[in-house]
Length: 468
DNA sequence: AGACCATTTCCTGGTT
DNA sequence: GAACCAGGAAATGGTC
Image (cartoon, rainbow, N blue to C red; front, side, top):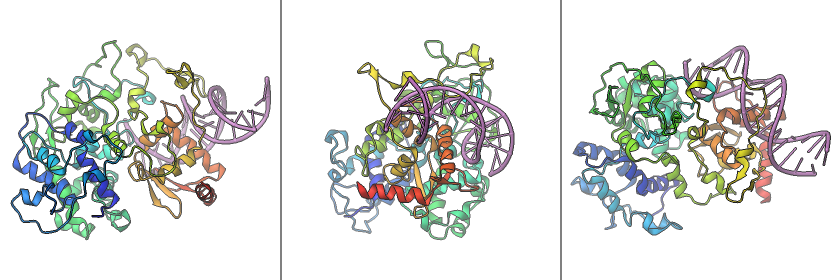
């Protein structure tokens, strides 16, 4: 059977034991409805009923007869080059895990929440006492994380659009065939009120699918009120009532008395840092519990899972540093002691020395940063299915128009290449803006995170690729 | 060694 | 208010 690339990635994602292990809660009984929702949302679109005995068909598991003949490929097709013991031997094993009580893979949005800062300490808090330029960005500039951290009622129209793109991508829908612009001016609150007809009016082809995904997303959310006991979780499925959050009074410290890095702050605290409505906190079943108890802080599991599937870039030569660079940006931010918080810190303008970052600890000598131009690097990852469309995507490849999807993750890739742990999208974008004057990039007015290669740049890079 | 280039860092101010 | 954008200024690191 021939499987499209998006399907392949989905299947790989599903079979990867890591996401499974990170998303179910041991000892928790999930209802049959939850399991069925899971199958309908994730398993069924991917796994057709099969003549392969090794495969468990979702329809069959529900007592329905298989309606299509679609052979699931041998798992070894996907795992070439990986240690065999790292992966399930067949699909039935994966499905079995999913259908057993306690083994529940949360809906699609849960995995995306992995892009959010990870909570190691449920008592951690964040009190907005960091200077603005030292704070970790709440969304990590990750548009997925932005919508996944809010209840859909509080989504902005941009976040609605981001979710639509995400839903399309998750289902292997080519965005060129999507009427995404119909969702452009719809706020989350209006989407919540919309029925199936509304979705179909906006998107005749995929409206039904989007409607179902959206309803499942809403139904799968837990609302959790802040309590005095931050360790206490009281999930109430489908309870979307509101109650104001209670502020925290302290910064939780690490064992060495330094405040916890922002990346360790909980989903709860992220909600607190958002605008007013986001003080109300929603969770996808299971995520916070598992994260807080067992999740290692790095690397970002969502991205790590992707990287595991692609040990070698399909195109070009993305240095290995990129693939294994630390994505957990906030972890690298300098700790700020409480006594410094209220002191206005003004340093002389210009670039401070960053010698320490260029030190090769293993060999005890200076390590040279890769000397690759930023715009060529951007082009390379745009041409690399490992990063496109997850991190960056073409808006119009012929015209050279592209868009940052996970801006901060791209900045981290770039920082990895340059041995610069402190790279951010803000800095990367400044470097990008230097290209306007030099005629490498052209401005795209009114569109955030969208850039355009000049014709000259496109020609240069094409020549370079042909010459390789 | 020094010039030059390509960023990198920080900043102010504006827009979405 | 956060995120993003624009662009000035000054500094760094790599290359020649």
